[in-house]
Picture 1 (cartoon, rainbow, N blue to C red):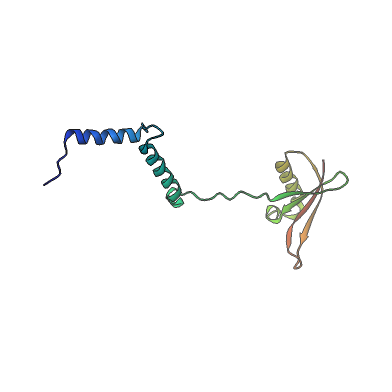
Picture 2: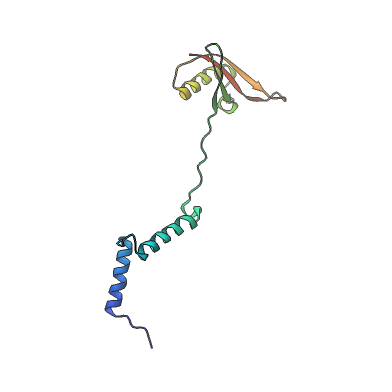
Length: 130
């Protein structure tokens, strides 16, 4: 015997779908619990790739303030920030980088490259006065 749909069955189904979409159930009903459960399952079991969501790697600062002495500030500047500039322009570029990083105008009076055991530059020490 084939299954026959009556108007009341179709109307009941459409009413249930409408209540589901409009979230028309009281908090203490099983329908509400079912909807919350479905949402939680969706949240925890949906693969991240479906939404092209990737973890954001925070940009680490390429400039770090080190402890200075006698009214001077000392900063570590990564090599990659200054290596593309010729040596005479590096001190000016370093001063610009420090100003943009700290937001303060400082007088850069010395910029020293730091080398490893194979004499490759690892970074720069920048000495400033406020």
